[in-house]
Image (cartoon, rainbow, N blue to C red; front, side, top):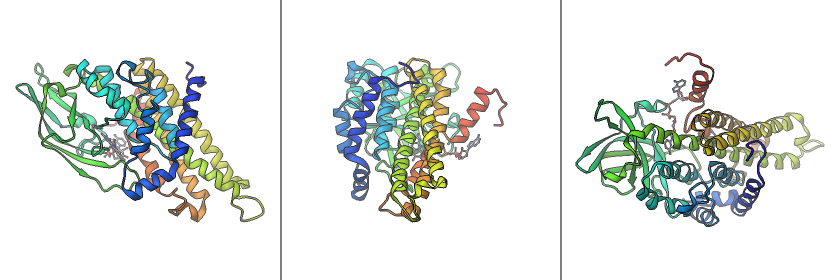
Length: 386
Ligand SMILES: Cc1cc2nc3c(=O)[nH]c(=O)nc-3n(C[C@H](O)[C@H](O)[C@H](O)COP(=O)(O)OP(=O)(O)OC[C@H]3O[C@@H](n4cnc5c(N)ncnc54)[C@H](O)[C@@H]3O)c2cc1C
């Protein structure tokens, strides 16, 4: 498969997901938000069509594809106005990590459910006192006999209320050196000592964010994913798909906002011509279209490298794709709101709420500045300030 020219299979997948998205659309999300519900119908239908687990291995009920296919699913649902945020964490991060590094028992227990949508898994790395500096995380796991005991705090973790379990990034003490190393633990939602508090976010999204407390959470030995010594490698195996999927989320949202603006600019007439004839309106929309296309191209490159097993090459491309997509999305939404004039700020047209939603892709899962740091240091070889 060429990463530049999309294959016929990918075009077909895109068209099929777009058709599903069109049947639900933005109105579905607006209704859900009013009713305080989750997108269960869309999640179930996407699962039935094989879209949720498209990246997971066939032997565990998945589609046998990769992040390239899963990112198409998320982008197209987003472009239709009804993105499924949990795709970023459940099949993309958690499914990938378990498929690549989990024990056979863990794969059998989790992958079929993640693939058919009957189970969902959240992902928790961010901590209040570490933020962007994940080397500073302090959630610690200690061994007590056959069990692991986890203590720590997490913040901004999405979808913990609907997820059957959360994949928690903690650290264990190296028996030989005493130094701390990252490890991943599957923590079922109702485990004793695993508390959550919903954060009051300024976001119109069915998926909520939570602060988590892990207060002597006791877990069986097999809660540790894969190998204790391969923690860092496993973590990065999940973080690159997360970045590609956040790019897909951003490109999808940007396309949705752009399409609404174009539709409006073609019709709205306050002088002789529709406002879209004025270059001050048309050119920024054309620029946004170009920037979204460019971001998608980098996203496809990152997905292609990742699916081909090039974790290092995928790392740089996934960061750059996330950066480009986040910036293009923020610009697309800003320009779309502006194109609609006063209507851009009404609930009826529903674009204003995307202003905060678009900013998420600039901040999470890794901020714009941290990507610029990465490219400065890793790609350009510039010295570090921190
Ligand atoms: C809606 C939403 C959903 C999320 N979902 C999840 C989730 O499911 N799981 C999860 O683990 N996390 C999640 N996050 C957390 C997200 O990944 C973090 O917010 C992000 O990593 C930034 O961390 P922080 O908020 O602590 O910001 P900070 O690290 O405090 O950064 C604040 C500002 O300082 C800048 N900054 C920090 N260090 C530097 C530096 N060295 N150089 C230049 N600038 C710097 C940053 O770019 C940023 O602009 C979510 C966040 C949001 C908003």
